[in-house]
Length: 55
Image 1: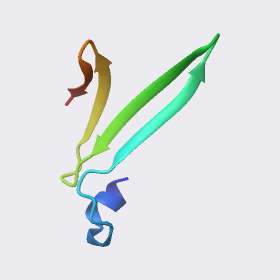
Image 2: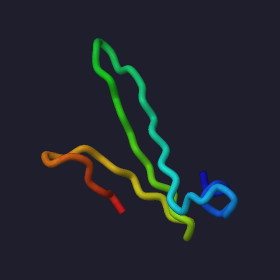
Image 3: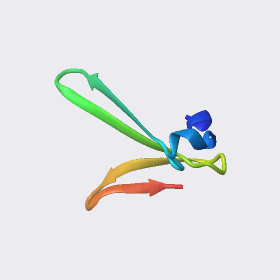
Image 4: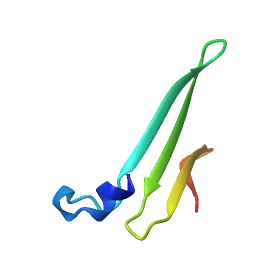
């Protein structure tokens, strides 16, 4: 993801990675991460008003 952010041919400054998985018994877990060109990673989590940053 950092390679994509750094490569100007992608035109994507902050690529987002979504990880979706199943957790027993019948739940779905979703994690979202933003990879910034500067090298830091921001994890988004779902709060009461939608997704919030853990930066």
